[in-house]
Length: 88
Image 1: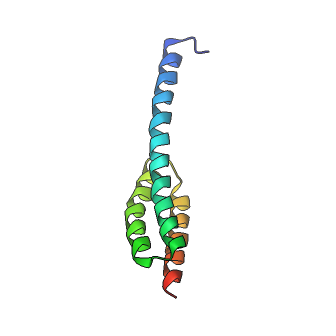
Image 2: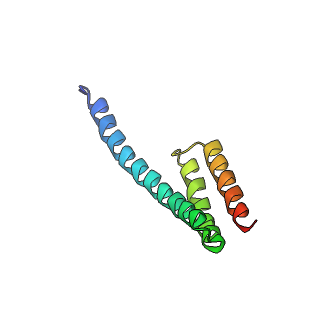
């Protein structure tokens, strides 16, 4: 349990940040799920649209420290490859 006033304040800050991070992570996962669903349905147009919407969200998550930038790059690369494979 926090004893000092600064430790108590840190507990409050951490709780607030955790909620914000949880919302951001959830938002990113929603965008990723939409891309995944479009890919599994085989709809290239919908997959492209969902990917274009998901891309800035993922980059924003990397900026805010939700995901590492290399993780975001890897996810975007793999999704892009799978979307390109739909038309082939």
